[in-house]
Amino acid sequence: MSVDLSGYRAIQPVMFIRIDIPDYAVLRLSDFNQSYTLDGETYSNIGQLLSVSGSASEMRVTDSEFTVVISGIPAGSVAEILNNNPKGSEIQIKRGFFDPSTGTLLSIAGNPAIKFKGLVANYAMNEEWDPASKTSSFSITLICQSIVSVLKNKVAGRRTNPYDETKFYPSDLSMSRVPTIMESNFQFGAPV
Image: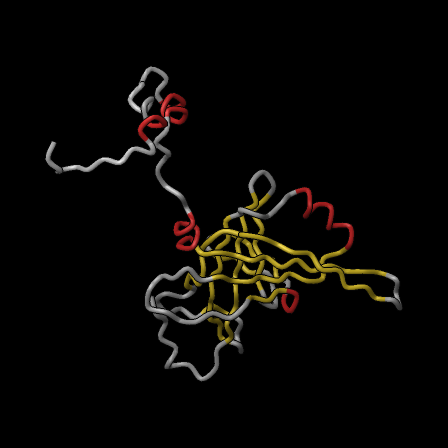
């Protein structure tokens, strides 16, 4: 759904990111200047510490990839991140448009809109060392794939061999001759 912003002189785009890490928590982050409740869920404001890669506006759903960077993570939280691997977590990114003078969400149809929905395909940690204070802070980069990309990589079906057949159907012997006839040449339709 497109959002009509032609009637506004100034707007403030805000990203709302929801990451559902299994067996850990649902993280709700935003680059807004204050915490904000959207659809009954409160998104923590981390402002400039959150960045999302750019995207192209396309008419169809594509197998696009997004990168989300969360920086300023204290050293004490690194073990918690590593113990609760975000890989494979569901991620949803919404973009809302706000009035910069009042800080309120513009009441127009389709606002906020889902910008991206997919899974965290991989992640990377980066350490930033400050020699003056002898402390370090970390950033985590989440590489996210859309659901379309995940479906393209999915392998459907199963192998036709006696081992897989008896695994699913122990009493079925219909594939038992496959290894014997595997290298045979059949000329279907040829005269006998």
